[in-house]
Length: 270
Image 1: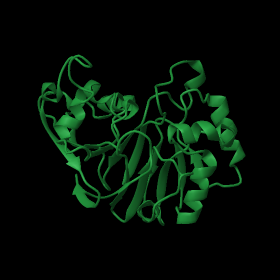
Image 2 (image 1 turned 45 degrees about the vertical axis):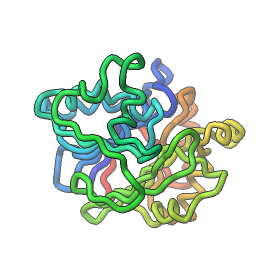
Image 3 (image 1 turned 135 degrees about the vertical axis):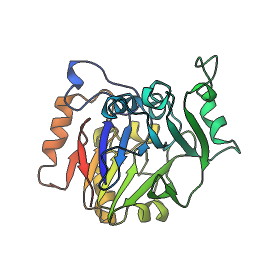
């Protein structure tokens, strides 16, 4: 399968000349199956989701969108996803189950007047909304394993996607310093590619803990402990300039299995 990094930032988009090389869109990863050109699974719906439309070449999107949690930076692109908001689109939307709400009602917490002009029913095409539980699921032809991860403010999931002999884990928001559950370690263990929260650096540890995120070193240590074959540092802080990210990349030059996520990168898995 193939991962297309459409947005690699956290918290807010980062516009401006200092954020061009790594990209300023928030979290979104499109997944295409082995032997397929078109993505049929999307992980998170940050502002990067808008850029999937031109990649589809005028086709309506037909597949699933699965969010790790419902914070703004992970859903803000959803109502601006043109290929999903047209006649002929077929979209299954999944969010972590919580508070006894349906998938539709979870999304409506951020997408209804007066917060937003339309409700989920205002999206064109065929949409279905689901509240997802921890477990193993088959979605859009992929095996999807879920685990609850520690983060601040609402239920948050990490995902492991398997298809065609390859596996990728996606854990964009995760506070490692509070302890990592066995379920999360199993999710990551021996994975081919791990995309993991690395919003902060060690000198910013108090902020990482306060906001419920990881440092670069947290991500590297966890990936090593769990035997991840490749680590992609993800969910960059919105103030982390291209030059600062270059510095992180250069500091890890001795670890070629670690890279810094770049918007637009394509990663072949397996």
